[in-house]
Length: 482
Image (cartoon, rainbow, N blue to C red):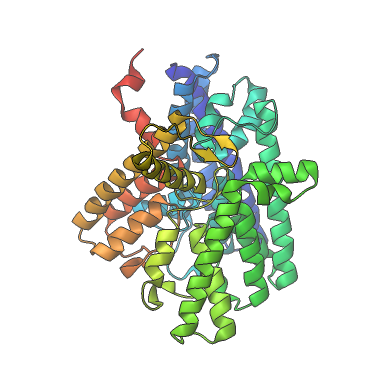
């Protein structure tokens, strides 16, 4: 492990990240909203800090190892979000304090979508755009983008890639070379974003709203340019476009790559994880729509629209809204919120525990039941036709156990700040699953929560985005031993 190499790479990545503040600067000049100086200041501070990290270590050249990848992934996501909060603190009237700015930045980059801001409709256009762009960059991951670029600067990328792609099956690559894999992911991601933007414009959005919402839709982030989110437009067509692209983005990007390469959609139906997600969402939508109809919450058409939209939005951890589902009758708010713990497919931009882990937990539970009946039988856990190694099965249970323990620990921590149980439970779950919406006092926004609670939720967002172990491994003594 070489500290100088890590600092050199962090410096490079921070300078690279500073370039992402140029588009909102241009947006500010285009709309003449008067806050371009906030982004210039953010660029200057980021570049200077990056140079201070890079220049003293510019001659340090070593191949990255797995340990280095964990450190860089965790440190850079933390550093990136901290520096990403600068424009939110500097844009003038209405700017955020340190805690709120860091919370909003982490929420954007981790694609959580929780916000502390009220009066989003009245923010400067460049700030609105910047929030959406943060989610777009976080959706696929700044680190994956860096993997495609940094090899030209003499930095190997496999160690980073393995710590960034979400899910338990991380070693599969779309192409033989890791650089080409990262580029393929970004080509698909950019193409989906462009297609989503065009679809939104055809459905009636302005180019600015279409661009902004395409960023957060494909990233499954949930930020909007309006307080009312997608509900602002009150358009069934826009809602259908949003549902379609949320579903696409919740599938594994490896399936999108295969579909593009082989010009076939059958892989989506043959993949066990994709099939499970589709059936899960269908069952949840049927229960939700029927409940809304039977309780006369909405008429037939609006019940179908709102029910299907909120199911897909919450279950895929996007977090857009067309209605306040926390006020829906019976157990529906709780049911939808629990669905977010499943999340999307491994290798997608969605949050949650990932569908593949849920499948493995269910199959392992079934195996243990069969072992009670046939104690001497050798029963393999299979996903589709593939037998899952016991090491992966054990890792899934380990992940689930640590997930539950961390959830309970942070729940107690948030409640200790004076937050009620429902609000604490839902905000911790929302942050850890990178969902965004919550119940209780945070159903509209997180602005009134205590500062300490917000910092706990920031940690939860980071743990959720990097899937817990990537961060926790840094706190084990064995990691630091030579």
